Image 1: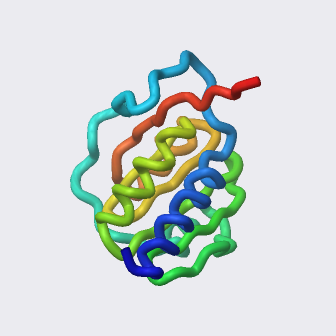
Image 2: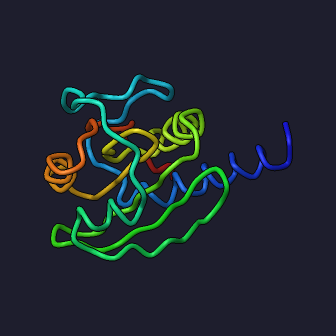
Length: 144
């Protein structure tokens, strides 16, 4: 694995933990369990930038990670805080989602982009503007 690939995986794992945003509540799932599907996939979506996602939310994005493989950022909209990531390749997005779903939360997933928010309703409203599909990850369980 090249140093760039290692850096991309580390950035994806760190980003996944940051994007989790409040880690959902609810019953715990076994590690590696399949993600829950909240709703059916919308028609195919085009790839969009973080700035386009933020405009659809009605906020200005603050980009926190600017890498060749991915960009991550966030902003506050009328329905709370949003975190978003865009990916150079579908493989990077799949890897990112596999890591992120371990931490729970809800995800609006499109063509090489992902948005998270603490409220699934906020993502559903955004889905009306951007398309994509709503997914949830496993619930993160704190160990004492």
